[in-house]
Length: 146
Picture 1 (tube, rainbow, N blue to C red):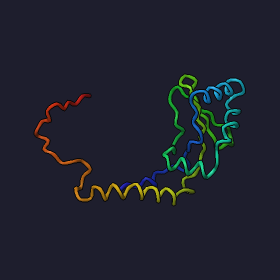
Picture 2: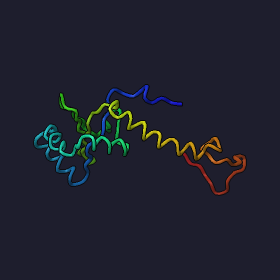
Picture 3: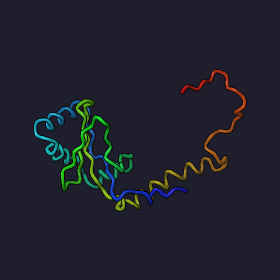
Picture 4: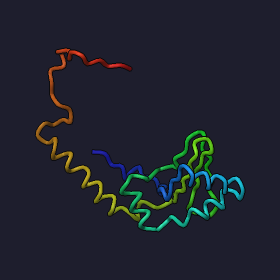
């Protein structure tokens, strides 16, 4: 029905490591003292190549753009496949790596097929995901609030 591959970006971002708490505070101190490039260099030790890519794809840590909020700082060092996002306000640091989804087409197709077919089989007989009920009868004790 929908072809997500037609609109897929040429490259995407995967999460290498996300730190909070004391670990993030140590990295935030390093960023403050030595700059974000030092933090990127230090955090690269958690990138295990294909293992990191597979884990990110499996767990859904794949992004079309670098995920960042208004309070985040984002740093990309020229020529590096890495991007660093961090927030002193919220106490976290994240290292992401650029990758080409064409390298993982077979993996994505396999995962997508596994995810779609059980849902189709589960609802094939009803034609809808919602349970049928008489909507003209009000349900006592049920309120909707916006």
